[in-house]
Image 1 (tube, one colour):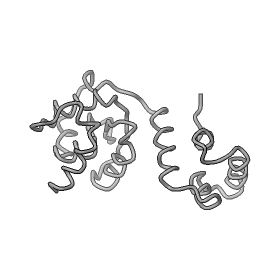
Image 2 (cartoon, one colour):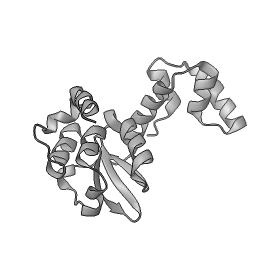
Image 3 (tube, helix red, strand yellow):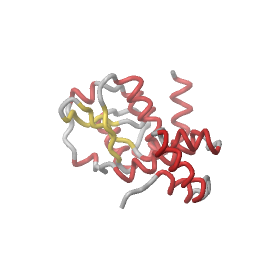
Image 4 (cartoon, helix red, strand yellow):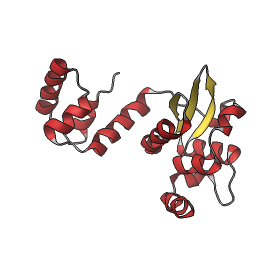
Length: 164
């Protein structure tokens, strides 16, 4: 079953079905992305579009169990311990030239921005459960005081920001 951005925005009460139809008609005429049109035509907040996109992407991409994956040391070396925890980004391995990078739906937007702006290699994102991602981070990027539960700890973000 295909999960469409407009349907997600309707489900979240951000747009109504008539607005989605109008955006789709405009998209057919102009070829502009749905999210861009929703922002310009109906003043939808960019964060609402990004949240819906992250939910859509998380449902469409592969879900992995970090405990069952084989890891490439070259991938692990691309990310520092601080980056891995701050961005909840767990590099797994290279598939050809692309880096498989695991995260959670909750951290998808942040991880994507990190990957695009910092890593300098083509990346594709896969999803992991918060606990699975936490176990992977603890295994490959051990840090005193961190546990798998730290993945969901919002205070971690504040601490890393202060330490930076």
